[in-house]
Image (tube, rainbow, N blue to C red; front, side):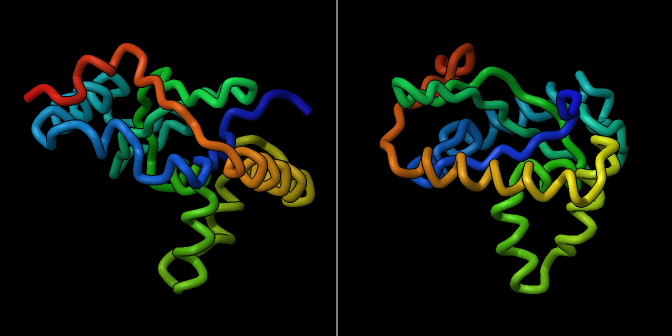
Length: 151
């Protein structure tokens, strides 16, 4: 299978609620968010959809030294964001607040794969999440580190 255009990115449990969004003063986050959305011309950086955009944090993981590094920001539509955060999407769906089938369909459509191909990808993402959640992680905010605590 070719590389996926849209991936599932499950944040390890020890890192929940530890994001640039949470640490930046609201005013600073709004400025940064607006800059990112404008950079993507207010369209999803993955599927190209318009509408409501989310400023998504792109993290890389060093699974040897347990360091999560912020590598960039991207504008995402709500459907691509729900795919990225499939765990949260599943919890919202269980409460009747989200159509998880529509989220899975979006993932398949963007990646041009079948539902049968999607299921092992989803399973592997959750297995990786379970393994990563067993560890304590350090965070590296990369080029954005200087913004935290300012303002």
